[in-house]
Length: 314
Image (cartoon, rainbow, N blue to C red):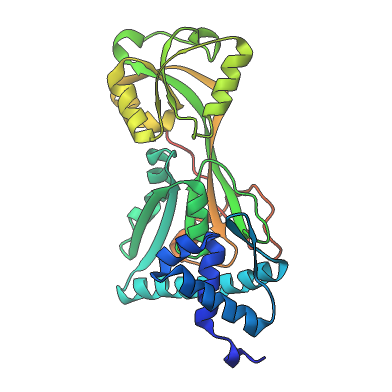
């Protein structure tokens, strides 16, 4: 079979179903019916003379052949979306840098890391916030150029990504100046019964903080658990409770004296990573940010290294 015999619409529908793992979700994405999708995929399987899916309960799983075909489809359609993103920026006479950021990450860290791009007149910066897994899926579809996260992503044949370590910050205790100025608390020894506001359980540092308190037999008085770092900053500023967070989150309030640092633990660190796809268009403004960062996970064979290691502001 030569390539002219391959129906790329069938391949496109297969790619969307394989990426979603669900006919229902894929049908919504491409605005067609499930039965039409099934028919298109069956025609592709007939043309290839191979089964691409097998059903496990209510979920579709790729066969070994399906996994290989999906990898090729990722390159074909991923590069197509990458091309459209490049053309969109080019038509505007600008360079577009598309950033995904994990919802629990410090906004201050993101702004500090991206600051060099803010001064470049030829750059359009787009930033989408969400959860790590959906952002990585968008990265692999070349809908994003980089994902900023507080944990690395392990690469695999199905997920050819690369994580770069950007920096870290010790976790601090902060409180309102009135009532906490001049006081020092140790983490976790001095927190027994102390009213605290904490990051939510979805934040990478929360489980480490809870484990530290449990091992020491310490039980803080939980008053709030907040998913969004911006909201946690506002709670720290307005509540009067001790708040456990990376110092960079409240850097402006500490500088102005609205909040004071009450304690810090080097045993608790939030780490920051830039995650990129293996096959990507190299965007020079982004490459300058990525130069010099520390690789944290072995890339797939043939992947190029690079990164940037900023110093988080205090």
